[in-house]
Length: 296
Ligand code: AMP
Ligand code: ZN
Ligand code: FE
Ligand code: FE
Image (cartoon, rainbow, N blue to C red; front, side):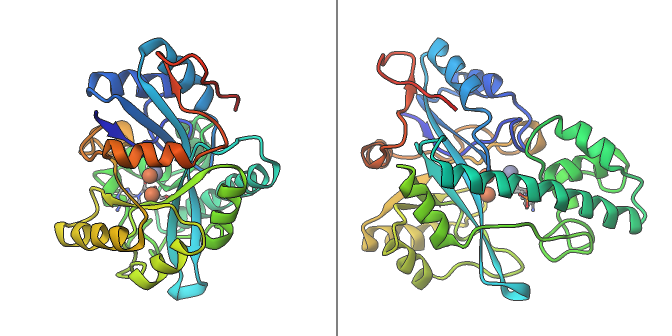
């Protein structure tokens, strides 16, 4: 079984529509794919319809913006949340706050870019995002279009959009323990995304992951494009020691990150089944099962 538990659609900063993402997942030979857009479930319905028709299994999810600590030393943390009830009011309200503040913050980043001489506009960024939850990659695309950088990844340098960079503005983010509590109260399963990807040289410590494992964290993403072999082995050993789930995923974003293809990293069947077994918020959606349903 080929299982990819971390992808983005045009509901956030990916470029495939949810239906196109499902079609591409089938083409990539995946049996199971999770849709984990940033801070939104807006793609669930279209992805579910497409998955039922295509006979692939969809794991509805999201990637929730969190932050550990404050100010200069703060570490951004992304929490993958699987199979939660999208209607659970407290978590739904927090996702809305996260999305609203992303809009304020993107406008502020565009303003900084303009002060730095980039001829981009909020109108253009909004058009690129086209109704999606806005993120720095949309601004990066505008910077590419304006000829300020050669590629989206080149926009993520200290000169422009990187954490702490010249045009960087922080966004509202959840305290990680609060995110865990919200996800679990909504029947979901929280897995920390790319713990060793780092930001400004800082990565979350093993002690902190252990602490969160005691506070409801169900797993960690081990195999991820931003993790070197040493980090993967370290995280795999840590997950085993803590008795939590180890996953692997692509973090696919469509053509915005063309080097990242669906299924470049995958999750074992055992890990996937452990996630499904812990979930009570909603079911996986599959073309062959009949009892599954999702109402965003
Ligand atoms: P935001 O959620 O708006 O803070 O933007 C974070 C998103 O930007 C991540 O989820 C990635 O999709 C993307 N991103 C972050 N760092 C990089 C990078 N170095 N190169 C390309 N994309 C990045
Ligand atoms: Zn992203
Ligand atoms: Fe992420
Ligand atoms: Fe992601």
